[in-house]
Image (tube, rainbow, N blue to C red; front, side, top):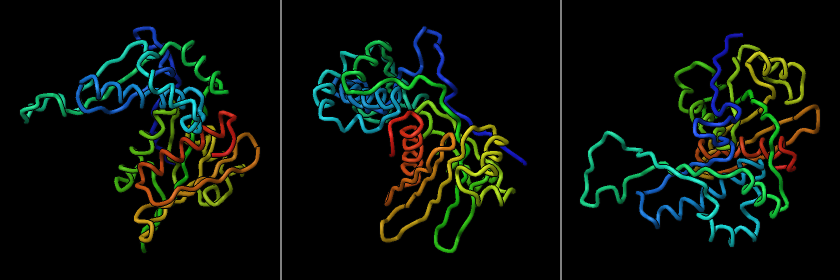
Length: 260
C-alpha cells in the first residue's frame, strides 16, 4: 500500500526551555497590546484545559467564567510570533492591528489543579495516532482523500492543523484497499490498513456539502480498543471546523470523557 504519512504534534516532550509541550496553548491575537493579550490569555486557558484533559466540554462549565477573569495569572510565560514577519508595516497604527501567534506556557501543577477543580484530570497517556479514512461529496463530485493527490493537499493540511491543538497526529491511508475502506471502524481490515499507514486507530469520515446549510456536514465514526462504535456529526461549517470537530471528538472518546 502506497502511503504518505502526514504527521503533526508528535508526543509531547520537554522543550528546550524545560517546559512540557503538552502544557502549552497557542492562539491568534491582533497586536501585542494589553487588551489583546488578555483576550489571548482567556482563549489559551480554554485551549490548554481541553488539550491536557481531552475533555472539550470543560469550556462550557459555569466555573470557567471566573477562571477566565484571572486567566493571565495562570500563565507561566508567553511569547509572540509575528504572522506577517518580513512584510513591511503598511498602516499608521504600526503593529496595533498586526496579527501575532500568542503562545502561553503553563506549570503542569497549576493546570492539573484547575482540572481537579473542574472535576477533570490530565490525559497523560500516549495519544493514539489516527488514520483518517475520508470520503468527500460535493454535488456530482465524489472522491476519497488521498495521501498524495495534489487535489487533497488543503484538506490534508487542515486536518493536521486541527490535530495539533490536541497533541495528536494523523495520517491518510491509500484508497487502494477498497475492502478495508468499506469496513466499519472496528473491523480487522480497517485496523490493518490503519497500522499500515503508521497509525493506531481508524477514524472514518464522510464530508458532504449542503447548500441548505451553506456549509459541510461531517459525520465521524471511531471504535477504540474494540469498544462500542461512536458516531458524531457537525453541520453547516467549513472543512477546517469539520476536521477540528473530528479530532476533538476523538480526543473526548480516547481520554475517557465519554461521547462527543
